[in-house]
Amino acid sequence: MSKRTTLHVVPQSEGWAVRKEGSSRAVSTHHTQREAIDAAREVARSKHGELIIHGRDGRIAERDSYNSDPLPPKSARKVLFHKSLDENTRRAVQEAVDMVVRKSERGTSQHVVPHGKGWAVRSEGNAKSSSVHNTQSDAIAAAKELLRKRDGQLLIHGRHGQIRKISTNGPKSQLGKY
Amino acid sequence: MTRSSKNKIPLSFGSDIFINCPFDARYRRLFNAIVYTVHDMRFRSRCALEARNAGQIRLHKILDIIAECKYGIHDLSRTELDSASGLPRFNMPLELGLDLGCKRYGQPYQQEKVLLILDIEQHRYQKFISDIAGQDIASHSGRVRDVIDVVREWLRPELDPRVVIIPSGDEIWRRYQRFLRALPDICAARHWNRARLGFLDYSAAAAAWITANPL
Image 1: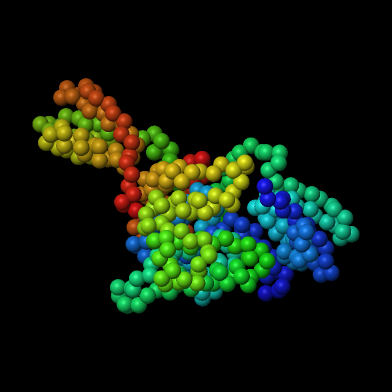
Image 2: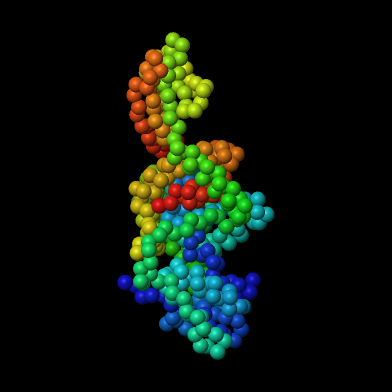
C-alpha cells in the first residue's frame, strides 16, 4: 500500500505555504491561510491523505483526515457539472432531466387495436392513433419500433377489443445512431 | 500574476479532465462517449469548445484549461489530410505538446498530471509521432464501446475502491445507452436542438442524468 500523503499548512515570511510531509519544497504558497487551507484540503481529499494546519506560532492548530481508514460506507462520488454553469441553469437542467427520467420509468405502453377494416397503434392514455395499418402484423411491427426507443409494454387487442397478448419490450441499442 | 496566485492549486484541479480531440461530426459519437464516461466516473470534462464566445484568444483559453486540469485525454487518431484543404490538422498534437510541457515545466502540482493518449491503432503513433513513446497510449479502434473501457481503465487507479463505488466498463456502457435514449426527450424539455447540441449543454445533460440515475 502506498504511503499516506500528509499536507501541512505552515506560516512563512510572507503568507502561507502548503508543504508535503517529508519534502522541504512548498507545494504552493498563498497570501492567506484560508487560501492555503483550501488548496491543501483539495489535494488531501484527492489523495485520501491528512491535512495538518499550523498556527502562526508553528504549533498544530487543527487536523483533518481524508483517508479511508477506518473504512467509511461506500458511496458514489459527487457528480460534477461544468463550472461555468450557474446554479439556476444547473437546477433547470436537473429538473428537466428528472422529469424525463420519471416519465421514462413509467414507460409508455403501445396498444395495437382494431381500426375500421385495419389496425391502429395507440399510445397508452392517448385517444388518437399514432399510425394506421392494413394488417395487424404491420401494426405490431410499428408498435415494436416505437418501443425500441422507449421502455413499455406492447398490448395486442383482438378484433373485439379484448387484450389478446401482452409483452414487455425493452429498447435496444442505438449505438449506430450516435 | 503573482507568484502566490500562480502556485495556488485550483480547487477543481484533481477532478478536471481536459479532452483534446477532433470536434467534427465524424468523431462526435466518440467524443460524446468520452464526456459521458468522464462524468460517470465522477470527474469533470473540459475542452476547447467551452472557450467559444469567451472573448479570449483561443490558445490562451486552452492553455488556461490545461493548467487547471490534472488529467488530459489526447486523441491523435485524426491524422489523415483534411479533404477540403488537403493538409493535416495539427491542433491535437499541439495541445498534447502543451500539456506535456505543462507537466514537465509547470508548478509542482502540475507535474502530477496524468495524461492518456488515444489513437485508433495501438502502435500507429510510432509512424508519425514516435517521440511520445513511453507515455500512456491506448487504442479505441474507433469504437464507442472500446473508448469507454479505455477511459474507465485509465481513471480506475485514481479512485479508491474501498471508499467509492466505481462502475465497470459494462455498467458505464449500459448506462450510456440509457442516457442516449433519454437525450432526445431532455433536449425537447430544454428546447435544445439535438442535432446542434453544444458541449456545455451536452455535459450538463450527462451530469444531470447521472445525478438522477445514481450508481
